[in-house]
Each structure stands twice: as structure tokens, then as C-alpha cells.
Image (spheres, rainbow, N blue to C red):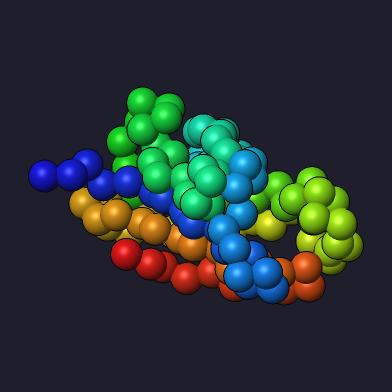
Length: 115
């Protein structure tokens, strides 16, 4: 059986490509936001298991994925409204995987719970 995890996948919908080497951080709130782990997306735009990087297991609670997109837009010579995107979500069932893709463009973004 696979250990439940949190993962993401970042796609630049304006260019139709995955976003590689993008800094992504995972936080959990207790009294304040606590950094759990940080990583960068792979060449296919994925961060596969942010909890495993920190040696932690999935627990019920409120989490945040922080995507530092500013340098990506600078590198692709485009201005953007969003230098940082934060996605806050609740884990209510700690025996399931949580995959939260980010669909990104310079002036908007969307996210959803994937598989």
C-alpha cells in the first residue's frame, strides 16, 4: 500500500508546457504557518511527495502550498500579476493522496484536486 502524500504539478497554460525548476514550499498551520519542506519542480513540472522530503506523514489539518513564480516569469521575459501564489487547503482524510495541480499564466491561475 502506498503512503498517503501531497504532490503538485505546475503547467504554464499560456505556453502549453510544464514549469520546471519552480520553487514550491509546503506549510502546515498550528498556531502559525510552519514550513514542512521545500523543493523544486522536475523537468515535467512535478513535485511528487513533499511530505516524504521532510520525513513526515500525512495528518489531518490545514496546509499551504507556496509557489514562487516571479523568477519563472522573469526568465521567460513576461510580466505577471502574481509573484507568489499560495494555495491553502484542508486535509480531512489522512489515508488518501492529495494531488494539487497549478495551472498558471501571467495574469491568472487555477488549481484543483487531481488524482
